[in-house]
Length: 309
Image (tube, rainbow, N blue to C red):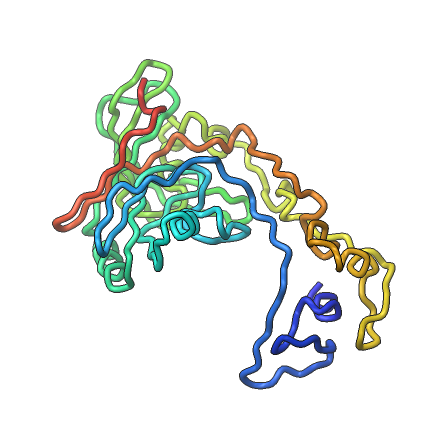
């Protein structure tokens, strides 16, 4: 694909088209022009909770990633705050999974970000989340100490209860807030910060998050196989034309090169341009970051609507 991009002029050196055989020299600038499809997110505002000269706290909506990653660029908390409030630069202090909502602390300069980082690494920061789980959670406090083993291929973690040699050490404290017999609202206090830690530790306790389809059953989904259109490979026509350098380029590219970039034969997403919305398991997890506290400071976020039983 990169060879074709060079032939088509999508990859340029110092703003000029070059042949594939061109040898890049020191200090030259390489540019790669891409056709980007950004996945949709839910139409929720990013309310600012607290604004200080060095710190900004917001209530992150579910479905919106914290910062640019993967195909997300503008539809992120950082991107929205920059576009709608003119806030930059921004340094997220901690991360929240895309489907998780709640408190997000953002430093407004590198010095403050480093100060938060040191406190977190020293174990001086306390984190509190709430979750809506299946069943009647026990009244007594529960502490789950089980290593977390994350499988990047499946996009899923497992709690290694029996084999302590696998995964990374993880510990979470759970306390029931309320229950109606069918569901329970649980306070979750992670001591460590592993991928999907709260979700997999709740599953291990027998009370998974009630709408967490990734962990509510034992079935795993290989995301490298059942991926979105962004994961699929492009099919490029064998038909070709000659470029300025006597090299072959896809015919589809030349036919569409003068259009307004709506359909791009080199894009792995085209022509699937219309947003397909969300599956039922991606409407936002019933997991919400409620409070962060450290030496001399505490930041909080209001409860979500689903936390009322």
